[in-house]
Length: 105
Image (cartoon, rainbow, N blue to C red):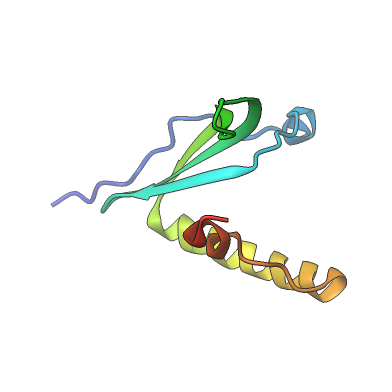
């Protein structure tokens, strides 16, 4: 039986290519998953007005959607964990925004 090997459909990154890519700012990320992959939806939320009852009108712009294997998601989790620990060592403890969202603040 022949083993199937996943093939990349994108070309390899060329030297200097990442330097030419513009940085994108996001202030929201959504995560979904299936048995086969994880998808990250990076969004920019901006307040564009206010309803008569005071509720803000928010514009949501999808900046990027990244799909990766579960193995790469684990590697990303580790890299982000290490980076946050280093940042907190230099600048102080960060608050977890998930706590605020769950409370509705």
